[in-house]
Structures are given as C-alpha cells and as structure tokens.
Length: 160
Ligand SMILES: [Mg+2]
Image 1 (cartoon, rainbow, N blue to C red):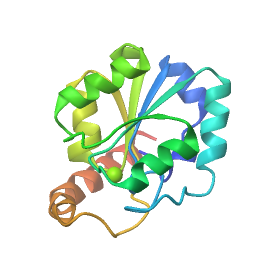
Image 2: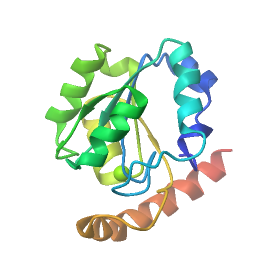
Image 3: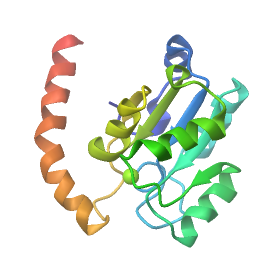
Image 4: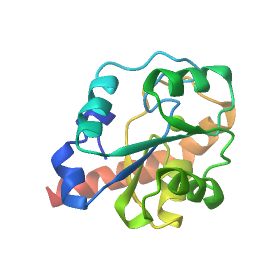
C-alpha cells in the first residue's frame, strides 16, 4: 500500500522482478472520469520505462477520457474490463507479453484491482484514491473495503 503511484520505487519493482504493470485509471492516476494526470505520474512512468518496464491500462470505464489518457501516456488500454473478472487481467497480460509472476497490478480498489490481480497470480499495490468522486456502485464497495484496508494498514504498521 502506498499513497500515490509515484511512491512506488523502481528499486522495489526491480526486487520483485517486475517487467509489466497493469495500471488502473480512475482515482489511481487521474481524478474520476477526467484526463488530468496527477502530478508526478508522467515522470514516474518515464522513469520505469527507462528500466524497460511495460504498461497496460485496465479500466472498467469506457469513456472518451480513458482513450485520451492512453493517448497522452502512449499506453495500450483495455476498457470496459469488468474488474475483478480475470479474463480482462489475462488480456492485459497478453498485451504486455509478461508472465503474471513478473507483473503487478496497481490500483485504488481492493475488490476490483487488487482482487482481480491476485486471482490471476499477479502482485498488487493498492494506492489511496485520488478523490472521493466516483461511480455510485464504487461507493458501496468502499464501505466493505474501508475496514479491511484499515486492518491492512494497522498490520503493515506492525510489521514495519
Ligand atoms: Mg480506480
């Protein structure tokens, strides 16, 4: 768990042997349903690309702004993914051409991004959502997610 994607250090990904990143869009790198990349995202992507790491965007969103972000970052994108359903994650891995064991999912939701990644054998990093604005059904998932994330944070604190 990290606060923002740019907190994910290249050294950590190297240690994990990561070659490919499946990256969520809304509330992970842009505020919900916008194409406004958060500060530091473009530089973080460039830094990891310099290490040879590949990216694929994976989003349940199918709006125009999703394609815009993909364009800005020159990334493959899989839209309307129905996360956490595994087929979309397998499609993302196929697009990356990296094995699940050398790939990581990065996203802001436990029950879509992290769960789907884990179901397909990937590592996962949970980031804090950029904003509170999101899809109405997401608000329901957040109610289930919050106590678990709070528990995970306490647990991580204990390990540190
Ligand atoms: Mg998201």
